[in-house]
Length: 148
Image 1 (tube, rainbow, N blue to C red):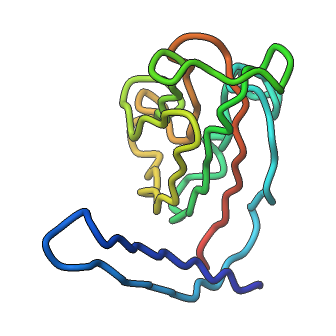
Image 2 (cartoon, rainbow, N blue to C red):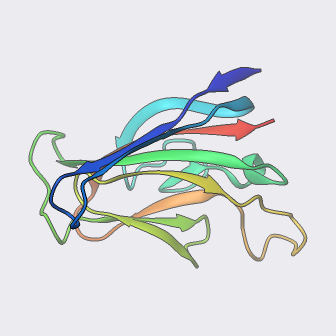
Image 3 (cartoon, one colour):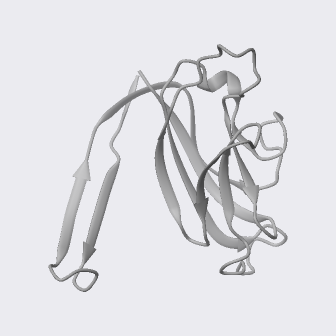
């Protein structure tokens, strides 16, 4: 088992009438399955589980997982050209693409605790997580960890 320490910091002097400054840190004990930080095109079959799958269904059954994902703001075609600010978003979805969980514009990121898949419906509502491109395929960075 290992320890993961996520931290979120928010600060602003002009978003509200009062200055904002906060930081939250927690400690998570994690185990396999997990994946360290990886970069890929949002339409790649990186895991051999189907295009755009970043967490396979089998890895989500009855387990709480934490997903870190970032839209790198670069087109997948060459990895260096900036993506379009509004058209080239990435949607985070359940593996069958039926439910949108989040939408990332270029350089947006998220750290999301995922609800476990209970396996009770015979696979009709898949567990697992995939990404879907809004326009052109873009580069993403992601990792996931399973809580003990």
